[in-house]
Image (cartoon, rainbow, N blue to C red):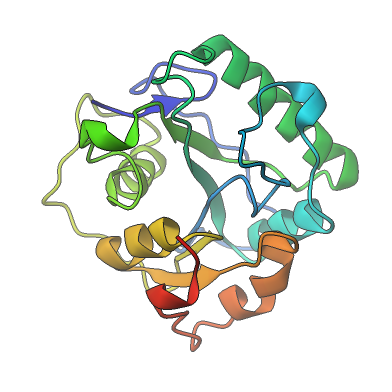
Length: 213
């Protein structure tokens, strides 16, 4: 019950865009939920590109994360696929449009990797939040540029500056279980509301109970 990966098979080589920084990447990753963090969410899901609305300053915030040395990995639950409401191709169209809209606002607002869980909540997948599997998978794919053929749950990485940003308790639980700083972003504001906190390595994030279910 592995996650899906936008634009490629899961273990394909990952071609990362150069970060707009001086020096080498220090390994920091911003793990971002999608709905309520990058775009406006809906209780009935985002079902097509016409329903996609990017939150104010989301593009600028993603660009600022990358300009401060973070890779940006989207980790999103997308159970409509598992529920049979629509398919992987529909989701790919939505994610293509999301990246296009972000780049229209800021050329540095590149999503380095998008992983999604197509599984329904009752399937028990380790790759559906609140489980931390998508964060672990993102790290290993980005760290290796995709030069792997399976995930190793025993590997340890320096996640000192890394952070999870989400608008639900399941997001923060996933971040805490993976061992990264986790931040609650109000869904009407998104990632911009916590950008400066994420950039501050001394800010250890929020308690899980602060976020809604």
